[in-house]
Image (cartoon, rainbow, N blue to C red; front, side, top):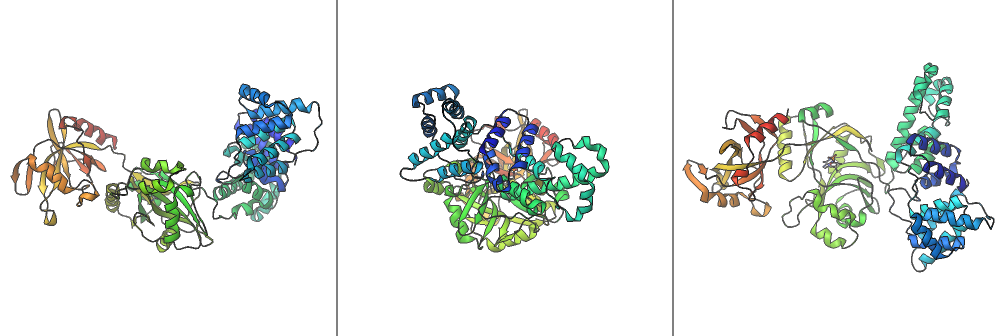
Length: 607
Ligand code: AMP
C-alpha cells in the first residue's frame, strides 16, 4: 500500500478532534489495507514501530533529522534551523522544504507503507560506531523519495511525536468497525441468523455502528446483529488485553476473525493487561460480592509487577513498562526461587528498610522505577520483597480460565517462601467477618494498606475491573490520643507496661476512649517497643493499684483503628475497634490531642 494514502489519513486525523470522526477515518483505512500491511499500518497509525510495551526506541536526535532535511531538500542547514525555530515542528519544516525542492525536480519512486516502516526500523537497529552517520543517510534517503506531506509524517514518526491524536479507544473501535461486518462465517452456531440479518449487518457497516439506535426499522434482525457485534467487540478487547498490541489484534481480526481473536495466545515476554480491583467499604459487602469462603490477602503498599519467566526474566509495571534492568534482585529471586520452566506471575513489589526489615510506604521506592544509573547501589539501599498473588501462565499453559483457588495452589507449589525476597502473598481462606478483621489488623500492623478479598472460583480477567478481587482499606482517620493509665503485662511481659488507657480531649478535660495494646514490638530492633514505652511512662506514674497504674497526662500517641463504636464503658461514650499504636507523637503536646467532637464526627461519617 502506498505511504501517501497513510499520509492523507494522518492529515484527516489531525484535522479533527472528534473521536467518532477519527474512528470512522481509521476504520475506512483499515478496511482497504491488505492483510500483509495491516500490522505495519496499525503501528504507524500510532506513530510507533514497536508495540507500546517494547523498550526499543528509534533513538534519533532531532538535530540529525534537521541535517537529513537539509540534505534531502538541498536547503542550507541554517535555513532548516531557522524554520524549525519559527514553527517548532520539524515535520512542518520537512514538508515545506521538500515542497520547495519538489517544484523543480520530479519525484522518482513511490514510497510504500512497508518501505517506510522497514527503513525506520532499520534506524532503530543501527548501533555502534558510525551509526549516527548511517542513520542520517537512511533518513535523508527516505525524505528524498518523499512527497511533502509524506516528509512531514516521516520526520514526525522518527521523532516519535506524530501529533495526530489516535487514542486506544478510537483504534479499538475502528478495528471492530472495519472487520466485524466483512468477516464471514464467524459464528457457525448463528449461521442462519447471520443470513437473516445480512441487511442489518450491512447497515451497521455502512455507518460504522454509530447509529445503532437509528436502525429500528430492521428491528427483527437488529437484536441478532447487535449480539454478534457485541461478541466481536468483546473478542477484540480481550485479544488486546492479552497481547497489548493493536497490530496483532487487527491482523488476527482481519485474517482469522472471531475464532482467531478468541484463541489469541499469551506470549511470554509480551505483557498482558492486569486484572483490576474494585473497592468494598465493609467486609460484609465484600463477602456478598465474592461469596464465602473467600481468599483474604494482605494488601501491600508497593507497586504491581508482572513477571515473565522463561530462559530470561522480564519485569513489567502495571502500565506495562519494562523495568527489568531497574530490578536485578527480582530477576535473581525469580530465577532462584520459582520452580517453573515458564510462567507469568502477578505480584506486588514492596519496599522495606534493609536495617529494620520493616515495610516502607510506596513513595520510598517509587524512585527506583525510573532509575537508570547506580542500580546496584539503590537496590541495596531500597530493596523490595516480591509478594506473588496470581499466576497467568505456567509451563506453556494459559491459566486465566482456571479458578483462582487452583492458581493460588499453584503459586504455593512453585514459589518458595523467602521472606524479604520472594514469597506467596500472605493469605487466609475464611467466611468469618471476625477473622477478616483480625487479619486486617495484622496486615495493618505489618505496615500494609489493608486486605484484598478474592473470589475463589473466579477466572483471571485481564484489563477488567471486575468484582473478582476487592480492596478493603480502612478509611478512618488516625487519632492522636493521650495516655492516662497503663497495665503491667503478664509472663515474659511482666516488666513492661503493655496496655495503655487512651483518652481524647473534651474541653479542658480528657475522657477515655479505650485501651490499646497492639502495634508495639517486643524487640526494639523491630520498631517502637514495649520496653521503650515503659521507660517513657515509668517516671510519669502517679499511683498504682494492683497491675494498673495511673499516668500523668503527657504522652500523645497516634492510634489507628477499624471502627468507632458507642460504648458505655468509657467516659467518652465511645470505643475503638482494633486499635493499634502507630507511633509516639512527640511533636504534639496533650493540648493538641484529638477532640471528642472529632470522634463524634468520625463516628457519624461511618454511617
Ligand atoms: P488500588 O491500586 O488501590 O486500586 O488497589 C489495587 C492494587 O493493589 C493492585 O493493582 C496491586 O498493585 C495492589 N495489591 C497489593 N496487594 C495485593 C494483593 N494481595 N492482591 C492483589 N493486588 C494487590
